[in-house]
Length: 351
Image 1 (cartoon, helix red, strand yellow):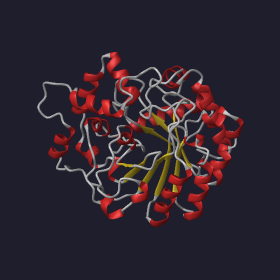
Image 2 (image 1 turned 30 degrees about the horizontal axis):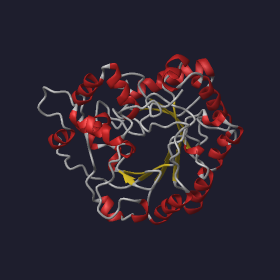
Image 3 (image 1 turned 45 degrees about the vertical axis):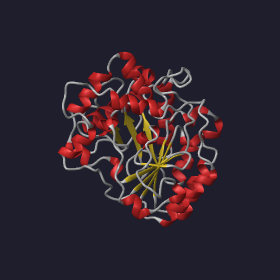
Image 4 (image 1 turned 90 degrees about the vertical axis):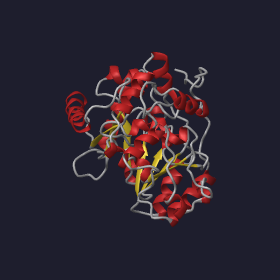
């Protein structure tokens, strides 16, 4: 399967996407701008609470081409964080009180310096919480990845993996043919070394993204359903399920427009705006680092090239804690996705 970027996807350019989002909000409603919703909740301008999480995108290369991917990742992507930028990240980790390092991609494990980077983080701070966002199938993609479960265990990484559904039909429809069976095999490999089991301390969490133009269901009840169905059908165990709303950018935006669902979906997000979810959005305690070292308020802003609103600290090598802690968070219409219903973040519902 080729990526939509390779198929001349008109929405793969971040500046075009942003212009499209700004100009095509459903008409007929007076207060639709996201900033207006924040003002009504007394949250504008949106400010950080503290910087607890450093989310680092190690590159856009991936062995999969998922239909909902906001990164537009795939095997054809060449953007990879190099060791120099990693060293700049390590300097920030060394100097700042950051509680969680969240490694993402693409498939972060495909970065040739992935293991070195994890080992260096552990040398600096043995107790820092490190998350790796693994697509599971990477573990089976090549013999050089077969030992990833053992590597994750050795360095006590939390593994967070996407699994759109507990059956093959819906999972493969979103992520590619055969992905479900490969994902289950990888989950069994993780279970074998202790991930997702009892009190092992090895966290294995799954992510659910809707397969269409609708909001995720209740997270707790869906988690219960996933645990029951996966255990019965495959014997797989995991700790928690995170539900994440698909934001209208990149491939999912392209799908919405091509299927004629864009206006209805945006209207649904706007009508579902929840001030409590807005209060707890992940950008308030997170900084996202792009593969080239530039800083963003979140991974979604990164894909739209909306850099942090900071005069002197726009790149990881320029990190100024005070300025970043007092910045105004950059928002736009796609942010309705994180504030709809029970809220959405990289850690699931925010309420």
